[in-house]
Amino acid sequence: MLPVFKLSNGPVPLLAFHGIGQDHRAFEPLAQQLEGRYAMYAFDLFFHGSQSAPASDDVLTKQRFQEIIQAFLHQHSIERFAVIGFSMGGRFALATAEAFPQQTTELILLAPDGITISPWYRIATQSGLGRRLFRYFLQHMPLFHRFGQVFLSVGLINRSVLRFAESTLATVEQRKSVYNSWVYFRKLHFNLSELSELLNNHPVRVRFFAGYFDQVLPVSYIKPLSRRLHAYELTVLKTGHNRLIEKVAKIF
Image (cartoon, rainbow, N blue to C red; front, side, top):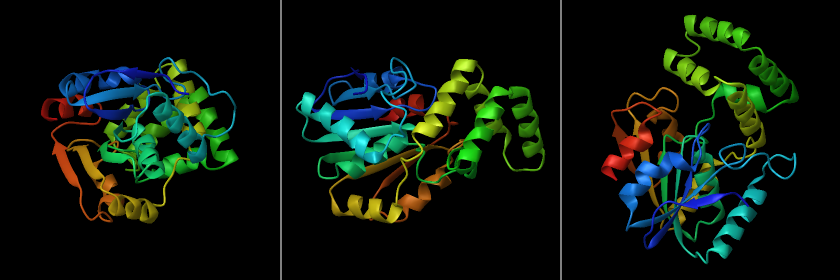
């Protein structure tokens, strides 16, 4: 089981999954606005908040994650629910909707990861060599910074992404959390044709929120899924990546 915190009360259960480097508290501003409408259950994902390492060293599979959510739903006697995910939490929101399409009433994605996969993520996680290099760079941050400056100068990354990476990797504990998360969650990926068919064939309300100034997970990253959907809602707010939950809370 994952630690879960009930942040608001209401008739519609809402399962919430935070971004990398966060915990359940990231959703507190939104939960305040949802009081009386949604019962928000915010999870602490592995390697974040009150949840440390998983019980085993295995990669998190979709089947194992489905079992975790099924146990939670059973424990709380929840039959139908909405789900929300921000950034990395978008992977978990997508995996939940994919595993429980008949029970999901609403899928709310805030600058979601898991739709467009960064080539850097593929390089860092999908092979043993890539994972060793990823670990090495995280253990030698001056070298990481120098390579970042080179990639910035030749246009392979932009300044906002580099700043986000360096702030996310500022401490030893943050670097451990990022490495473990990227590696442990790497099997949570999706066949977008199959996923969109599931969403199209069930009455799931799909809502996207994106930041106009977000260069980490820009609005264009949503298109590989949104263009396959028969219906969806898209709201673009004048903000970057880190303040998106706060901005969404003001209009939700």
